[in-house]
Image (cartoon, rainbow, N blue to C red; front, side):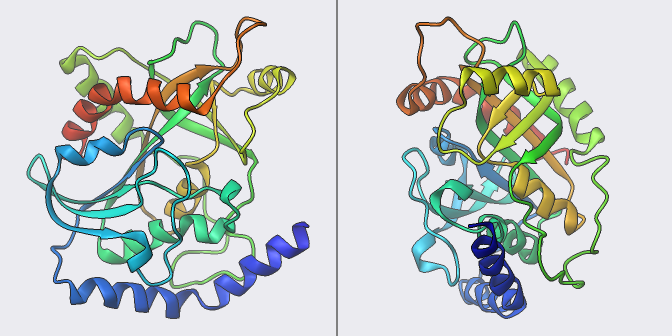
Amino acid sequence: MFLCIFAAQEDFMNNMIDMLSETISYFHKLNISKPGVGIVLGSGLGNFKDELDIEVEVDYDQIPHFPVATVEGHHGKLIFGKLNGVQVVAMAGRFHFYEGYTAQEVVYPIRVMKQLGIEALLLTNAAGGVKPGMKVGDLMIIHDHISLGIINPLIGKNIDSLGGRFPDMSEPYKRDFIEKAKNIAVSLGLPVSEGVYFGVTGPTFETRAEYKMIQVLGGDAVGMSTVQEVIAANHMGLPVFALSVITDLGIRDEENIITHEEVLLAAKEAEPKVSALIREMVKVV
């Protein structure tokens, strides 16, 4: 199975530059303004687009070589416009490895946004809380991640024009952005914590034993996205800030189960807090 995955990823890498050129040419024909900041909206956070002064809105299925979002809570649009006076491009809906895409297809939109001119990337996601004391609705700034549970999107032929073969990952989330976010959160009266995000493939939620393992290995929250995007961003020298909404608890009472519907509801309820923080972040990154 893994040989098939890596072969598909290798094919994608071999055609990457031509594909990017075609995608960027499509956007140039739309005469969009150059975005300075890229934003990726996680599960249940698609209504954040209401915060934007929208210039152009494009369905994913209209964009050359773009995957198509298949998950409830991911709208499937790339939106260009202004947020708090800053020119941005926002993904209302992201792609996941568990949908059947290769790791390179998952991160393709990040590469496109970089080619469009963004100089910073802001990511949000819905995550399961693992750290003791976490509550549903909490916000966690990601200061590091563990990628052992995902397929690395850089496997295969390296494209030197995008980044080096062995990118450094000692600061995957820019410390300066984290400090600015913490200061913004204080000014807004928003409680936030910091933690380590543990990436997994999904689509199953973790077993109780797996949650305990993740906690032992140093994870504070666990999710099925973000890590591959961050690796690709670092490969291209693109600074990243990422924020998790804790939508469920991995370490929980024995009788409780997790459903995707509950995750979406928790993310929706936390959306005003996420919106407030991201609105201010775009001005300082």
